[in-house]
Structure formats: C-alpha cells, structure tokens
Image (cartoon, rainbow, N blue to C red; front, side, top):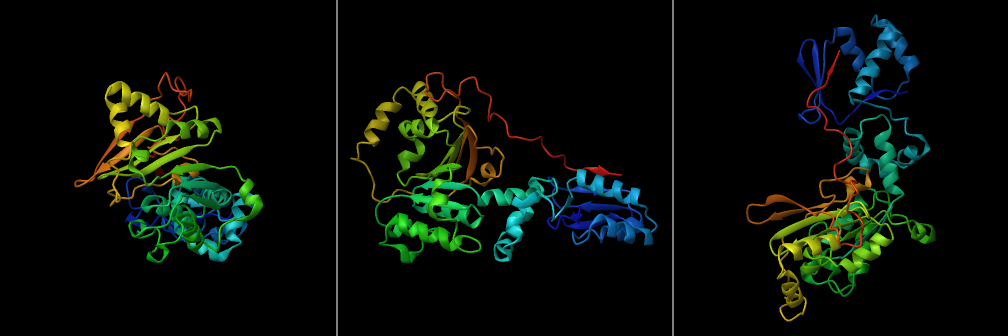
Length: 368
C-alpha cells in the first residue's frame, strides 16, 4: 500500500490536537487526538512511498509499526486515504496516459470522495473509458450532454439526430456557431471528439460492438421530452438498456426518469399514470402532436442533465423519478414515476432502484 491523504480534502487544525479533513459537512472528517509526532507523520502520506519506508520514517518520530498500521487503517476507514497504486490493471490505464489524467484529475478527485475505498476512484474512472453511451438528439441539451460525457472520460459517445444545425441549436458547451448548416449528427460527433480528454474517444469496429451502457434521450421536440414515446421505451426495455430522459419544455427543465428496465417506472408507466389522473390528457396530446400548433423555435433557455452518477455505479435521484425546474424561480421538484400495473415493462413489484445505493454519509467521523 502507498497511503495518500486525498488531495480533494483540505486539511486544517481545529485546535492543537484536532485535525479536520474536508470543508463541507457532507465530507468533513475530524481526527483527534493528534499529537505533534502524528501530525508530522501525516505529512508523509503523499502516495509516493510504501509502508516499509513509512515505518522507517515513523521510528524517527517514536512511532512504532503497529501505531502506523492503526492510524492508516482508521484514516482509510474514515475515507480520507487513497492508494495511487491500488485498483489493479484497469485502474492503471488512466495513469499511463498523462495527458488524459491531467484533464481528468478533478473528476478523479470527486470520485475519490464519492467512492472512498483506496483505488476505487481510479477503477471507476477507467470503467468510464470502457463504456458506450448513445445520445439521441443534438440540440441545445443533447449536444451539451454529449460533450459533457465525452469530456468526463466516457470511452465512446454516439449522437443520433437528423437535419441540419440551426442557429438556435448553438449553446455554450454544445454546438458552436460554426456548426450552423452542417448535419447535426456530424457536428455533434466533431464536438465529442474535441472534448474527449487525451484525444479522440474510442472508435472502430471493437468500439461499435461494445454494448450500450446508457441511452440519453434528449429530443429537440418538447413533447418527446415531456411525453416520451412508449414505443421507443419498449424497444430499449426489451434490449435491457438503461435510459434517461432530459430536455426543456416551455420554461421547465426536465431530467428523468432514469429507467432501469424491469425495475423502475418507464415512459409507458408515465403515460398510463398520467391518463388515469387526467382523462383528457390523451386527447390533448393527440392535438399537440398533430403538427398544426408546432412552433419553429421551441422555448429552451435551460439545459439540465447528467448521466455520470449512473455510469459510475450509483443510482441518482432521477431513478424512477422526474426532476423538473421551472423559471423564473428555478424551483426544483421531484415527480415519482410509479411502475404501472398495465405497463409492458414489468416493473410493478420490483423494488430495484427505489432507493439510492449506499447509506448516507455522516457529517463528522471521529477517528481516535
């Protein structure tokens, strides 16, 4: 082991015998009591040396090997220690590409806090690089999400859309002004390649054979965001592909539901449940879909979506729920999408995805 105090956690002394790691209540860890010798020893935990060397240095401070082992074990259990050499061959891949690692150090730092076991963050970052995500839609939301996923190290991001990019598709972090007039899918593909850390993401036949880890449905048509197609959902659920809906409808940004096939409510459940609550809904939807009232420039001044939590192995709050934020107050609300008894997806009676994995982290952890 090469113990390293996590760089993402700033360290400060609360008093002469108490050290706090981390700033926010969600991450703060308090270590006490800490005598001067132990305080000096903490400075040695930088990940460059293994335990045998640390034992030798600790003897100078009158700390025995057992004391070192106990301290490192307690700090590791508290989530403040990482090991840059841990995680196996897969975790070593990002470290071997310095250009990529420098771009992704902030992501690695964040992952080290969310997934506290030594080497776990590097392993999950490497796992991103082996994933393939498909983004359906290259408008303001879809193109920005695709760039976000590519920039965060997802190995392959495919973007599907038709037509030519319009001035209204241009957005910071999304399609640039120079893309206007190009095919949306082509322009989005170029954007994905530009934002990929360490050069272009994986391409070729092997990458194309990689199973989809996630589909992000970010259609430019507002109705397809707010009332997504159950037919599309049936195809994805039949293939067992997790999928997330994201977009903007009028002045409401929508994220979710994140659908785990057969485990959480899907687009079909959403449609059936809404029709039960509002019998006029199917009639309204048929009129809106008729095209007679379709606008040439749907309202879209809010882009809200991220799929990274799911790709990194967690279940975000959008799992089986839809998050909506409306202007002008930007008031967020969660709308559960309950599995419907008449839906083809079969999620009724399955508790998968009802709660996020892992217990809540305590605000402070005392290590003695």
